[in-house]
Length: 97
Image (cartoon, rainbow, N blue to C red):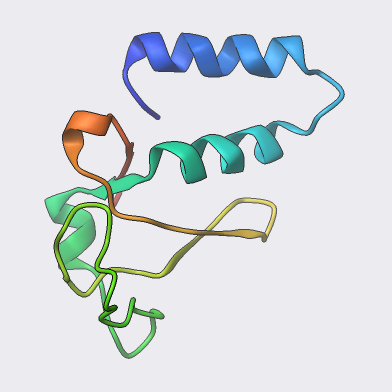
């Protein structure tokens, strides 16, 4: 989850639009903000079991071409196509626990 002010904004949006499932709001916010991967998460990327982003002529939002997962699976079984984003844009942090 992003920093506290962004979390408050996210929670406010969830409260304001109670007729929209929370995971739809989360997906939309992740698409908008992008993601960043922690060092622990990057250590556990395994190309033999994870679908990895292919190099692209367009690159990525963070300007790096690293072996990163192409998508994230949510608890409801749906997924989000992820876009690595520089920290200054305050993306969601994907960590390994």
